[in-house]
Image (cartoon, rainbow, N blue to C red):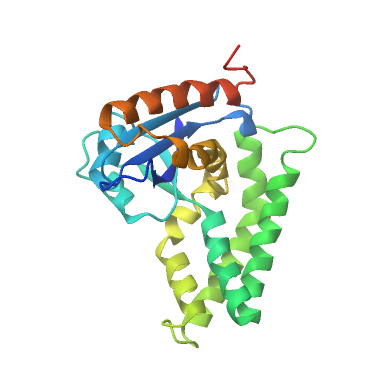
Length: 243
């Protein structure tokens, strides 16, 4: 089983921050047999220990952003063994897009163009309908892998020529730090190129949080997370929740 994870958000404007952790499984993009599902967990901390609690007993691959609190999930000492962390290319893209907007960097634009080409390959694999995980892996090995290799060669070359304290250097450092996890999608056709699937499921929560008057209490927050999980799962399965 593969899960997506998205960074936590504040559940309400209270003196003590509260957070919603989101988990999503959606295997439809590679013709998986499992129905999609969404689960929200209300937690009063953003510490990595909360991720361990939520994922107790889970093994497999977890798609995450670059939040360092998830690193403990990949530890060899973890009960049940290490989880394989697959990182999100959308977050990498945003880093370089910010550099382009701020500095008009041609080097950053080159990286954006390469990422855009890989996104194009991902989009083509969904036309006219999704293909199997094995077929996705084959296409990625043949078409995406050379682009990924080229991208990291450029980053390594740039890292020797520019100040790593610059805005571009910061984006390069972020990407290189996550290099192994950013390439998991190449060898596993079940893994997505980014974590947008779970970001889409948590967007209604982010919109609602300012109006969630009672989510600041632990009981209210937990009840809210349960209802949001049911409604979110209905929506991704094409079921009208209020009916």
